[in-house]
Length: 278
Image 1: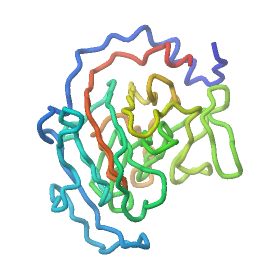
Image 2: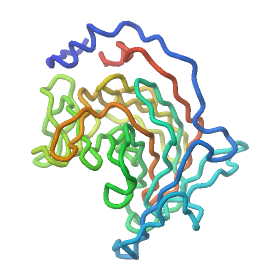
Image 3: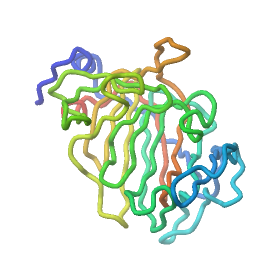
Image 4: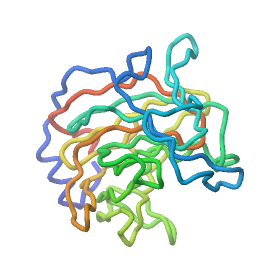
């Protein structure tokens, strides 16, 4: 058993018995994007500069960035990555276990050409579209990027408290044996915390992501391996600190072709205690 020095983790362990979960509910019907909306910002030129200050906006996807295609004999969601944006669930969720599978395609687009392929799972997404850089809602990010799957980013004034240690002069890494640190745009540590270890499959293979959220806590899991436990989901809202525990789900388009399938969700009454100990 790992040493859990923070009050937050200790309380989680005491409070949560083995979770009782509700039945799985699919969020992708295997046919079309029913239940989802699309939002796209402006495009980029070859130097990574925005081509316009005006986004394509809500449910306006002339370049077919978000489509349902046949791949390996099944219907999956293809996100081309050509423009930054996201598909967004029409419903809001809290206290849930979300599971999905993804794998990378081949194409990349400015400003990501020659860089790691990138996407992301945004949760507790609230407020207007396009708040973060003109592309995404205020939220917490379960990073989906080559080599960095499971990282945390605070999006548009979302912030989290995470046990972490300083890895370099400018980066922090999740460490359950360390003291908790606040991560967000307005914190000294910044809005990015890297995961511990690596569990992503080689390119071309499907990966399974599990996101557990209960109350203000969450767990990022990649291919069955815990990447980090996040203790306190909050937001800055007009200068005030408020909880951020419920919202929509966004899946990012961020310069790389990526496929998603088997997106499903179930309500939970607690976080799985066995994952908190890993």
